[in-house]
Amino acid sequence: MKPTPETLERLKEITGDKGFVAEERDMAPYLVERRELYKGRAAAVLKPATTEEVSAIMKVAHEAGLHVVPQGGNTGLVGGQMPDGTGEEIVLSLTRMNKVRSLDAENNTLSVDAGVTLATAQEAASAADRLFPLSLASEGSCQIGGNLATNAGGTQVLRYGNARDLVLGLEVVLANGDIWNGLTGLRKDNTGYDLRHLFMGSEGTLGIITGAVLKLFPRPRAVSTGFAAVPDVAAAVKLLRIADGLSGGQVTTFELVPRIGVEFVTRHLEGASDPLPEASPWYVLIEMTAGAETAKLDETMEMALEEGLDTKLVTDAAIAQSEAQRDDFRRLRESLSDVQREEGGSIKHDVSVPVSRMADFITRATDAVSARLPGIRPVPFGHIGDGNVHFNLSQPVEMDKAAFLALWGEMNAIVHGIVREMNGSISAEHGVGQLKRDEIAATKSPVEMALMRAVKQALDPKGILNPGKVV
Ligand code: ZN
View 1 (cartoon, protein in one colour):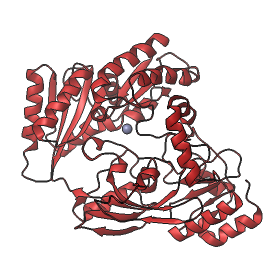
View 2 (cartoon, protein in one colour):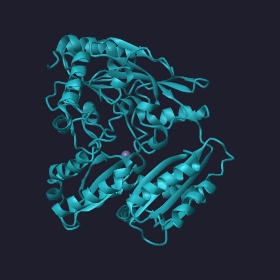
View 3 (cartoon, helix red, strand yellow):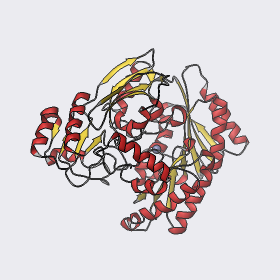
View 4 (spheres, helix red, strand yellow):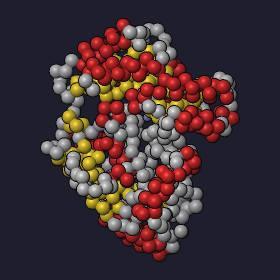
């Protein structure tokens, strides 16, 4: 429902002038995401400074039946943070809740407001000689609240798990304004349902995360970075198991890079060069880390790569000999999304299958999209160690961009059909948002959808929290 002028006045009293934005021009940055794929309108953007203010806002919203769209750093890729086009919804930005609350070095935990950026959380951990291992491309601007609400993934999931694995407690404002303080910081607590996991991955549809207790880890002091050429994806998976076994679980990052990706990077990124003398159809970026400075990780990496070479799983490889070379290897992987933009239209997929079926998936999906559109250029890359690949498709060289992008739905249907046949997920780490809402409803079992809707109904009976997203 559209808020009345009186209701808006009440909301403004809660947040103060600083936290109340209603001018079109000032609201604009909150109403469009970076790629401009999702845009919305809003009656106001509220920027509360405390949990109590969030609670007071929700009490008003609940009473008046206002729709509230929680927003963190506005870096989401599926439209979960965007209001609809009616101009009646309220955007609730956590940006001003940006304090690191406390760090408990002995408990190995960091307590933060939801609006703290991921980079700030990482820095706070590092200042105490600890590691907060969540790591994503948007870490400079994405916020912890959004990371947790979407159960973000990234490049170190292999070793440390998803966002939900890195949380010991949450503070959440519920749809009716009640505050649930679950900031226990306990590593063991079997006193009933583990409620925090309901909110993580709920994308703001069940409650608004306002604070969290995060798990910390020893700060790595040794790192080894390798770049290996492999003949196919199956070899990459076998190499992962060798590296993981030889290092005793110290592989932090294991990322797949296709040849076409290396070509895009060397073509469009200044200073980038081919990592190895001979071209190879596939590569992997491997990183091992250890807490002890004395760990001889380069030796372990070398052993793994040697074994790969001996068994023909690897055709060539290099280990970074300097920080500059390490950065070069990492950049080859990290810039893949950006350089794809320089090659015209790109149709994206964020899918997962069991790691053991990754090679089969990539082959089948590549064949299927190529049969539909000869000349299409698949760029499958990413977190192969987690069974998660960004199966992105660059347009054929000569094709019109708009004509290619018009095939988005059809390509999704082809790729997601194969994912489903392999018992995979059509949203591995980017969430559901608006983009995949109808698709998950059509593909999850009726039992699972009924459970999800029952949870939504119980926690948000009036349907005011992030309507139109997820369920
Ligand atoms: Zn990713």
